[in-house]
Length: 418
Image 1 (cartoon, rainbow, N blue to C red):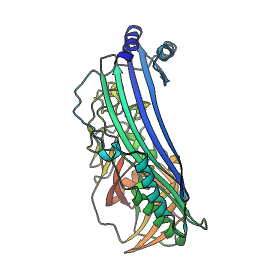
Image 2 (image 1 turned 60 degrees about the vertical axis):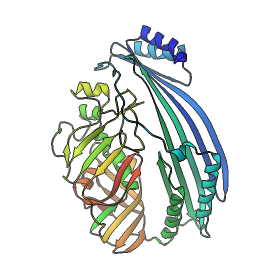
Image 3 (image 1 turned 180 degrees about the vertical axis):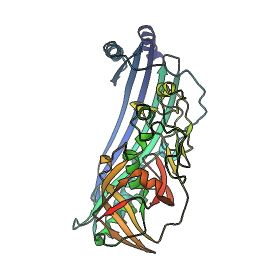
Image 4 (image 1 turned 135 degrees about the vertical axis):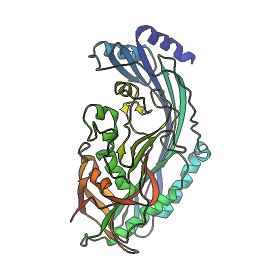
């Protein structure tokens, strides 16, 4: 605390309110391609993110050094900024019950372990007809400290491990990329097995020439559509500014009763679970949609107060953001006749307000009972709300992708364009 004392005193003297986030990262990245390990990168960094408030004027500054320049730049920015529409202050100290335990295997992982995992991946990928184009293992250890003008001083730690693998057939006809990140140790070899299998399967892919009863959207593709084309509607800043499809519809039915959506940064073992958000609001579970009825949207401290609500602990470094999102619905057996969407391209073009999308399907399967026929290169379009409103249920195993926990969505609400 001593190295901070001088600057905290300065901030208390020269600003009305302030929030300082100190983020320390230790990053380890091992890259490999073909049949060999390419390089290993290790780095440590500490970054300081400062927000100051003078009346309703906000100023921010970012630096890798905590010094007078950081503070003076933030103050100068505030003095020359227009007043915010509203500012109610910053959170006060609270008790933090959540304990973010760390996975022992990840905490003790070193370069030797990463090399051994990489060698195993290389061995799995490099078959006669498959080439490993690129791959990486990433281990990140972080420590985040928050200090504000109301005497909050809290520290939390994070730990994440990830793998990314891209491979193709030796004749370049087929390729596949997969990734997975978690805050606990997992078998990266399974990701390699999946990539290797998909490359081989799609060597025999054909165009889609048959119709099916329903469409099944695997978590990897579904998460992309949700992130770009649906979840922004559940942010409090969009809701209050009428930039949400659901503005003014609180406690009203907005989706099929089959759908429940939760945000929970207190989720045990959740990849984005934390002691508190970046403003210091303790982590909590927030039901956003319950059986199709809009119950809440995510808020930071000030947006919540302006809407006569309490913060949902969703403040990030750069605004309001989701933590662990859980999608729930009726569990069903996977239908025998279906088109299974595995990977898509173009989800970023989705309209976040109307939820409309039109995307290219890169990899898919035509399911005929127990037979899976690889198909590729067609389009699907519609709206994410229709996907959810016309869902038959959820099938298969729940997966975590990019902080969203969901099973495969079985739906009748999508247009298939061949």
